[in-house]
Image (cartoon, rainbow, N blue to C red; front, top):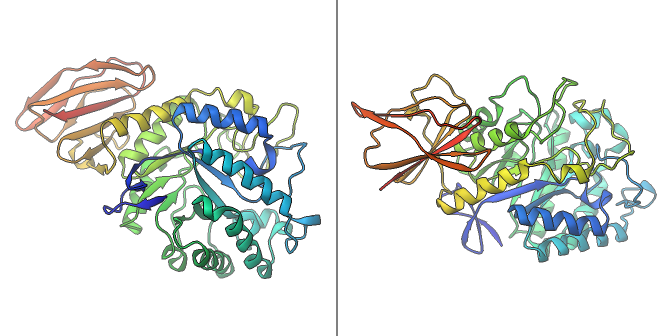
Length: 418
């Protein structure tokens, strides 16, 4: 079972530290065959993932599918389709057998009045009087599998009615599932959680998202969320997805290096309870010659097929991040930006205990630290190649200058006190 650690910065599983490494598979229950699911779980398990994020109801921007899995009989939200939920249950049981935790979104924003998504699709809003029956079905189907319940999906809270829906759902589900962890998935570049909902949450998610106009979002939002909502573990639950087209119909796609950077700067900026990976083609489960609404929402470009997306290398980078932090016992990372004397916020500094300092360097340069690291072992790990290098270190007047690392891309400087 997942729990919150006493330090309020991390998650525990069965009492042991648990770094939440999730993959985004929003459309699993509607778009994936059983054979595809088996392969998907096999591959993500090999890569080090331990959690799958899934939307319980159909994802509004899922790719077109020939499968016919629908949660409501004849699209009537008052008539739940038992077969749909039984199939979803079977998929979750398979994932649990393979060692995965489940993070399940209860109500995506398009099903709730007032949100940015439901304004685009007003016909999909669920009637308020059907919510209790639906939440009861969610509980009966999933709660004994001990999921992390994500009350909202990609949402904002512009109206009182929006908040009323989510608070109502959260209160009902909390009564049914008092031992499960709760959080909420808010929209990209957003940091508002209504107080009535926040009091129900065990941890906080934020979404740095897919907009290429401000690359500071992964760490800037982390800092904002910690200031506004202190005392709960924090996770960037939706950094930029690998090979996703930039949002806002902007030309370009997020590359492996981009998504790796988003992960490291998030974790070292205090969102250290975990990180979520996403791949264009996986979250929507895209198949060749099938449709995808590229002009809806934030206007993402056409994804590659799920088969191609499973081969994206960034997933291995996220598994490597998790492995490093586990081996270094670097769970409760504390941001230490005040030690950095380089004139940039893009280099991120985090500390675990008194004996470990981690510095993420996106492009090779000398790193100047306002700390005397005499007697520390300092090395640079090339994150693209996963090579290790000894680097020059100069200590003068109580400050440390770490020489430029030799790698072409980003690196993690690992400093350990001997």
